[in-house]
Amino acid sequence: MSDMMEDMEGGEGVVKKFMFVNRKAPHGTIYALEGLEVVLISAAFDQDVSMVFADDGVYELIKGMNTKGIEVKDFSRTYRALDGYDIEKLYVEKASMEARGLTEDDLIVDVTVLDSAEMANLMAEQDIVISY
Amino acid sequence: MSMLHIVNKSATERNSVESCLRLASKGSVVLLIEDAVYAATQGSVAAAKIQAAMADLQIYALGPDLDARGMSARVLDGVKVVDYGGFVDLVAENNTCQSWL
Image (spheres, each protein chain N blue to C red):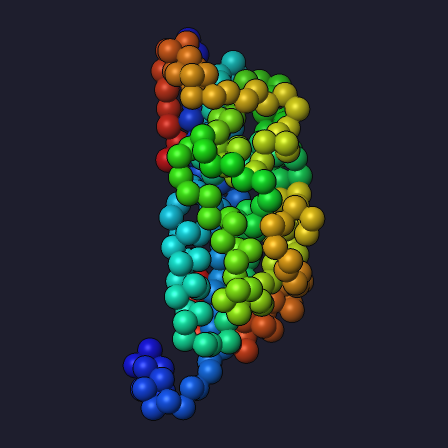
Protein backbone atom coordinates (compact mmCIF):
# COMPACT_ATOMS: atom_id res chain seq x y z
CA MET A 1 0.00 0.00 0.00
CA SER A 2 2.85 2.41 0.83
CA ASP A 3 4.27 1.72 -2.63
CA MET A 4 0.97 2.72 -4.08
CA MET A 5 0.85 5.95 -2.06
CA GLU A 6 4.34 6.90 -3.28
CA ASP A 7 3.33 6.12 -6.81
CA MET A 8 0.32 8.34 -6.44
CA GLU A 9 2.28 11.17 -4.83
CA GLY A 10 4.86 10.97 -7.57
CA GLY A 11 2.09 11.63 -9.99
CA GLU A 12 3.16 8.60 -12.01
CA GLY A 13 -0.31 7.14 -11.83
CA VAL A 14 0.82 3.54 -11.67
CA VAL A 15 -2.19 1.35 -12.28
CA LYS A 16 -2.37 -2.02 -10.56
CA LYS A 17 -4.83 -4.78 -11.13
CA PHE A 18 -7.11 -5.05 -8.11
CA MET A 19 -9.56 -7.90 -7.68
CA PHE A 20 -12.29 -7.89 -5.06
CA VAL A 21 -13.66 -11.38 -4.42
CA ASN A 22 -17.18 -11.50 -2.94
CA ARG A 23 -18.12 -14.85 -1.43
CA LYS A 24 -20.76 -13.95 1.19
CA ALA A 25 -24.52 -13.65 0.98
CA PRO A 26 -25.93 -10.17 1.61
CA HIS A 27 -27.67 -9.10 4.87
CA GLY A 28 -26.76 -12.12 7.04
CA THR A 29 -23.31 -10.68 7.65
CA ILE A 30 -21.81 -7.24 7.03
CA TYR A 31 -19.14 -8.52 4.59
CA ALA A 32 -21.05 -7.88 1.36
CA LEU A 33 -21.94 -4.27 2.22
CA GLU A 34 -18.49 -3.43 3.61
CA GLY A 35 -16.84 -5.03 0.59
CA LEU A 36 -18.90 -2.90 -1.73
CA GLU A 37 -17.92 0.24 0.21
CA VAL A 38 -14.24 -0.63 -0.24
CA VAL A 39 -14.73 -1.09 -3.97
CA LEU A 40 -16.35 2.34 -4.23
CA ILE A 41 -13.42 3.87 -2.33
CA SER A 42 -10.96 2.12 -4.62
CA ALA A 43 -12.62 3.81 -7.60
CA ALA A 44 -11.15 7.11 -6.39
CA PHE A 45 -7.63 5.78 -7.04
CA ASP A 46 -8.14 5.07 -10.75
CA GLN A 47 -7.00 1.49 -10.51
CA ASP A 48 -7.85 -1.46 -12.75
CA VAL A 49 -10.65 -2.97 -10.64
CA SER A 50 -12.39 -6.31 -11.14
CA MET A 51 -15.17 -7.68 -8.95
CA VAL A 52 -15.74 -11.39 -8.65
CA PHE A 53 -18.89 -13.02 -7.31
CA ALA A 54 -18.42 -16.64 -6.30
CA ASP A 55 -20.02 -19.06 -3.82
CA ASP A 56 -22.73 -17.26 -1.79
CA GLY A 57 -21.46 -13.95 -3.19
CA VAL A 58 -23.64 -14.58 -6.25
CA TYR A 59 -26.64 -13.96 -3.98
CA GLU A 60 -25.53 -10.31 -3.64
CA LEU A 61 -26.67 -9.68 -7.22
CA ILE A 62 -30.20 -11.12 -7.09
CA LYS A 63 -32.92 -8.91 -8.55
CA GLY A 64 -35.99 -7.87 -6.62
CA MET A 65 -34.70 -7.61 -3.05
CA ASN A 66 -37.06 -5.90 -0.60
CA THR A 67 -35.36 -5.26 2.73
CA LYS A 68 -38.18 -3.29 4.36
CA GLY A 69 -39.20 -6.23 6.52
CA ILE A 70 -35.77 -6.69 8.07
CA GLU A 71 -35.11 -2.95 8.32
CA VAL A 72 -31.68 -2.85 6.72
CA LYS A 73 -30.35 -0.91 3.73
CA ASP A 74 -30.99 -2.48 0.33
CA PHE A 75 -27.56 -1.94 -1.17
CA SER A 76 -28.18 -4.20 -4.18
CA ARG A 77 -29.08 -1.13 -6.25
CA THR A 78 -25.59 0.23 -5.67
CA TYR A 79 -24.18 -2.48 -7.95
CA ARG A 80 -26.03 -0.79 -10.81
CA ALA A 81 -24.19 2.45 -10.05
CA LEU A 82 -20.74 0.86 -10.34
CA ASP A 83 -20.31 1.67 -14.02
CA GLY A 84 -20.69 5.33 -13.04
CA TYR A 85 -17.47 4.82 -11.06
CA ASP A 86 -15.79 3.15 -14.05
CA ILE A 87 -16.05 -0.25 -12.41
CA GLU A 88 -17.31 -2.35 -15.27
CA LYS A 89 -15.49 -5.65 -14.83
CA LEU A 90 -17.96 -7.83 -12.98
CA TYR A 91 -17.42 -11.59 -13.10
CA VAL A 92 -19.59 -14.43 -11.83
CA GLU A 93 -18.37 -17.99 -11.45
CA LYS A 94 -20.64 -20.29 -13.47
CA ALA A 95 -20.51 -23.23 -11.07
CA SER A 96 -21.48 -21.02 -8.10
CA MET A 97 -24.44 -19.61 -9.99
CA GLU A 98 -25.66 -23.01 -11.15
CA ALA A 99 -25.32 -24.59 -7.71
CA ARG A 100 -27.85 -22.03 -6.51
CA GLY A 101 -30.34 -22.58 -9.32
CA LEU A 102 -29.64 -19.11 -10.73
CA THR A 103 -29.10 -17.74 -14.23
CA GLU A 104 -27.81 -14.41 -15.57
CA ASP A 105 -31.44 -13.30 -15.92
CA ASP A 106 -31.78 -13.37 -12.13
CA LEU A 107 -28.99 -10.82 -11.66
CA ILE A 108 -29.43 -7.07 -11.21
CA VAL A 109 -26.40 -6.13 -13.38
CA ASP A 110 -24.75 -7.37 -16.56
CA VAL A 111 -21.88 -9.68 -15.72
CA THR A 112 -19.37 -11.86 -17.48
CA VAL A 113 -19.86 -15.50 -16.55
CA LEU A 114 -16.63 -17.48 -16.34
CA ASP A 115 -15.99 -21.16 -15.76
CA SER A 116 -13.68 -22.05 -12.88
CA ALA A 117 -10.55 -22.38 -15.04
CA GLU A 118 -11.13 -18.97 -16.63
CA MET A 119 -11.72 -17.48 -13.17
CA ALA A 120 -8.49 -19.05 -11.91
CA ASN A 121 -6.54 -17.47 -14.78
CA LEU A 122 -8.08 -14.07 -14.16
CA MET A 123 -7.24 -14.32 -10.46
CA ALA A 124 -3.67 -15.37 -11.21
CA GLU A 125 -2.96 -12.26 -13.26
CA GLN A 126 -3.94 -9.77 -10.52
CA ASP A 127 -1.49 -7.62 -8.55
CA ILE A 128 -3.72 -7.42 -5.48
CA VAL A 129 -6.62 -9.65 -4.47
CA ILE A 130 -8.92 -8.71 -1.59
CA SER A 131 -11.45 -11.31 -0.53
CA TYR A 132 -14.57 -11.04 1.57
CA MET B 1 -42.80 -33.04 23.12
CA SER B 2 -41.87 -30.97 20.13
CA MET B 3 -38.78 -28.94 19.50
CA LEU B 4 -38.34 -25.86 17.34
CA HIS B 5 -35.00 -25.80 15.54
CA ILE B 6 -33.92 -22.36 14.34
CA VAL B 7 -31.16 -22.11 11.74
CA ASN B 8 -29.67 -18.85 10.46
CA LYS B 9 -26.59 -19.86 8.43
CA SER B 10 -26.34 -20.45 4.68
CA ALA B 11 -26.30 -24.16 3.82
CA THR B 12 -23.63 -23.47 1.21
CA GLU B 13 -21.31 -21.80 3.71
CA ARG B 14 -21.77 -23.75 6.95
CA ASN B 15 -23.12 -27.18 7.82
CA SER B 16 -25.76 -25.93 10.30
CA VAL B 17 -28.71 -26.77 8.05
CA GLU B 18 -27.35 -30.22 7.28
CA SER B 19 -26.62 -31.01 10.93
CA CYS B 20 -30.01 -29.75 12.01
CA LEU B 21 -31.81 -31.92 9.45
CA ARG B 22 -29.73 -34.93 10.50
CA LEU B 23 -30.30 -34.51 14.22
CA ALA B 24 -33.83 -33.14 14.47
CA SER B 25 -36.16 -35.93 15.57
CA LYS B 26 -39.30 -36.88 13.70
CA GLY B 27 -42.16 -34.44 14.21
CA SER B 28 -39.85 -31.53 14.99
CA VAL B 29 -40.25 -28.09 13.50
CA VAL B 30 -37.44 -26.34 11.64
CA LEU B 31 -37.51 -22.59 11.03
CA LEU B 32 -35.03 -21.20 8.51
CA ILE B 33 -34.14 -17.54 9.05
CA GLU B 34 -31.55 -15.06 7.73
CA ASP B 35 -29.07 -16.72 5.32
CA ALA B 36 -30.54 -20.17 6.01
CA VAL B 37 -33.59 -19.29 3.89
CA TYR B 38 -31.57 -19.91 0.72
CA ALA B 39 -31.71 -23.64 1.52
CA ALA B 40 -35.48 -23.60 0.98
CA THR B 41 -35.26 -22.19 -2.56
CA GLN B 42 -35.64 -24.04 -5.86
CA GLY B 43 -32.46 -25.17 -7.52
CA SER B 44 -30.18 -24.70 -4.53
CA VAL B 45 -27.92 -27.61 -3.67
CA ALA B 46 -29.62 -27.92 -0.28
CA ALA B 47 -33.13 -28.09 -1.80
CA ALA B 48 -33.09 -31.87 -2.18
CA LYS B 49 -32.13 -32.30 1.48
CA ILE B 50 -34.93 -30.01 2.57
CA GLN B 51 -37.42 -31.85 0.37
CA ALA B 52 -36.34 -35.22 1.77
CA ALA B 53 -36.55 -33.88 5.32
CA MET B 54 -40.15 -32.75 4.84
CA ALA B 55 -41.28 -36.38 5.21
CA ASP B 56 -40.40 -36.21 8.92
CA LEU B 57 -40.12 -32.52 9.76
CA GLN B 58 -42.19 -29.40 9.30
CA ILE B 59 -40.10 -26.80 7.50
CA TYR B 60 -40.78 -23.07 7.84
CA ALA B 61 -38.96 -20.06 6.39
CA LEU B 62 -39.14 -16.46 7.57
CA GLY B 63 -40.85 -14.30 4.93
CA PRO B 64 -39.10 -10.97 5.60
CA ASP B 65 -35.72 -12.70 5.17
CA LEU B 66 -36.85 -14.24 1.87
CA ASP B 67 -38.10 -10.83 0.66
CA ALA B 68 -34.86 -9.10 1.63
CA ARG B 69 -32.89 -11.63 -0.42
CA GLY B 70 -35.16 -11.53 -3.48
CA MET B 71 -36.04 -15.19 -2.91
CA SER B 72 -39.78 -15.12 -2.12
CA ALA B 73 -40.85 -16.42 -5.53
CA ARG B 74 -38.45 -19.36 -5.37
CA VAL B 75 -39.59 -21.07 -2.17
CA LEU B 76 -39.91 -24.86 -2.40
CA ASP B 77 -43.39 -26.35 -2.36
CA GLY B 78 -44.25 -27.58 1.11
CA VAL B 79 -42.15 -25.00 2.94
CA LYS B 80 -44.40 -22.77 5.00
CA VAL B 81 -43.58 -19.07 5.00
CA VAL B 82 -44.21 -17.14 8.23
CA ASP B 83 -43.83 -13.51 9.29
CA TYR B 84 -42.47 -12.32 12.65
CA GLY B 85 -45.83 -12.99 14.30
CA GLY B 86 -45.66 -16.56 12.98
CA PHE B 87 -42.13 -16.85 14.38
CA VAL B 88 -43.46 -15.92 17.83
CA ASP B 89 -46.30 -18.44 17.48
CA LEU B 90 -43.82 -21.21 16.66
CA VAL B 91 -41.75 -20.38 19.72
CA ALA B 92 -44.88 -20.40 21.89
CA GLU B 93 -46.29 -23.63 20.41
CA ASN B 94 -43.17 -25.73 20.90
CA ASN B 95 -41.83 -26.93 24.23
CA THR B 96 -38.21 -26.20 23.46
CA CYS B 97 -36.16 -24.12 21.02
CA GLN B 98 -32.72 -24.85 19.70
CA SER B 99 -30.75 -22.26 17.77
CA TRP B 100 -28.12 -23.79 15.49
CA LEU B 101 -25.33 -21.21 15.41
